[in-house]
Image (cartoon, rainbow, N blue to C red; front, top):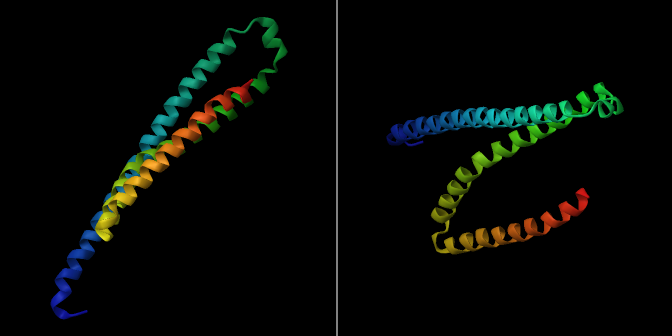
Length: 143
């Protein structure tokens, strides 16, 4: 390290610490928001499931074991809650990561920006095709 560059090193180091702190705060906020959304979704599902069970006739209630219903309801809704939380954690971060990666790629290889745009469009089209095929198949699977 050249003596004349000490100030530059300190400034870049401080900048890196600030960016790391901002990332830490953003990650915490991301997790909190995802948890609130997942908890809200699971609370709504629990309420609707409970109301549906309340609408069962007495013969239907006797056909199901109450303990079995509670265990299934709790386990299934917890699985949905975990899925929603993980999904939103990724969805909140994805746009920021994509924009940052695009900026860095364009700075690194400015002549090839069009390849990145082309690949994003291609991946989007492939995803749309796969999703359009999954819908009817999922419906058949549910029957």
